[in-house]
Amino acid sequence: MVTETARDDATWYECEACGLLFDDREDARRHEENCDAEDPTYLQ
Image (cartoon, rainbow, N blue to C red):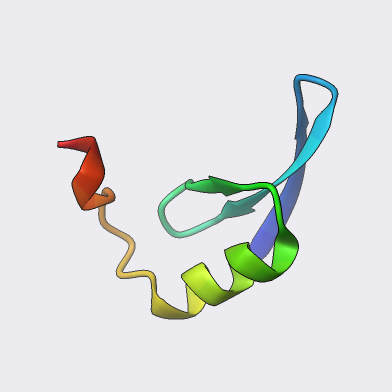
């Protein structure tokens, strides 16, 4: 489930599985459908 959060005077959408933030609800929803709940590989 995607949660809505407010930071820096903006609304962000967070993947509950991994915590990644998106500025677009649809992007967050698409990500969450394919999320494996592990840290994103680009944060190594």
